Image 1 (tube, rainbow, N blue to C red):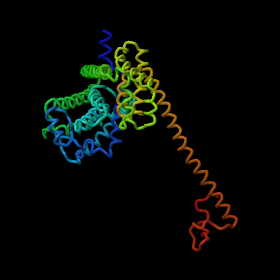
Image 2: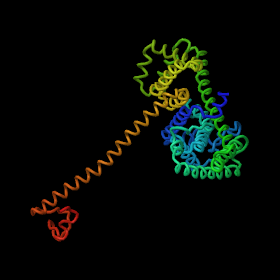
Image 3: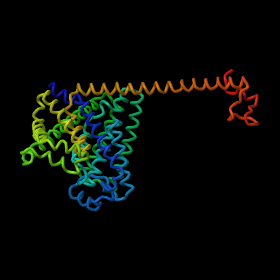
Image 4: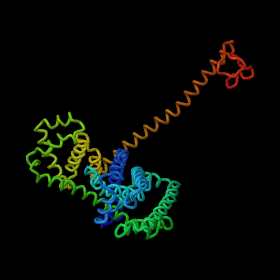
Length: 420
């Protein structure tokens, strides 16, 4: 059947998954860098949610966090640094299969350590970081895709992948021996490690065998299922938010947007917030429009044109929330989730624009590097000509030159470094 062949034979939505990978990795990376001076108060030993309280909660709900393996400050710094590095490497698409796992470990470790930190966008990142592990999110717009087109680079990537696999296996063995992993998380991480090792071994020893084709089918199914879950999750977020808003009296009378605009905590630009909240018609339209868009969006997926219009409206809405209410990372997380519904033609066009812009910047930098030595050479030749003219006409030589007396230059060094 054509549908089954398409689902099992291809990893669908390569551009959409690439945008999701870049969006969530960039959002989490920017958040970690911005909160770098406050990391100890948010997730570290100086936070209000103590290590003992977090340990009791983890013991009851079975959540995963590497920060529960030790309460030392050095271990916290290591985990935080690994979260930053894995986010940056996943953003670039370097060994995305391994980096997606590390990215998930960093997100879960920090967020499950202090569950009360965040602005709503952390919940979206929490979920999407787990779903990205099952997707082939490095097919396009990644260093992996760039290496795949080069034979030598692809061979080097295999060696790097094997080294990463052994390092992760050693770390996983150490953690298991210490008793820090148990139950479902133990099976989950060891299963990922074994599957990645089998994938590498079959690709190295028998790249055209039936077993490799079977692994490709399984990987495509996992990718397509993960992509479907991401789409369903985004629809559920909007649907539940919209239906819960309908039940609120402030949303029903059209005044709900007025209140956050007049809270100091959500007013980074007081003049702008006051301007928007001063118009009753504007508040009414935004309130009812937000509910209508969120409730209607899941039903518009069957109509491409209407879906694209509402998608643009939601992206603009989140951009306005980022500026007006001062919630940039929540907005970035939601925009990254919305990107799964962007049309492939638009993403290809966007990729072409970025590639042309990057090519223009690289060409300009190359031109500057080429012109700089030429200008330097012309300047050196002009200086040499002036000095030669002054020396030939009995002028006082450069006082910085070597000589016995000040102002004198030894005859044997008079033309050293100068053209005749």
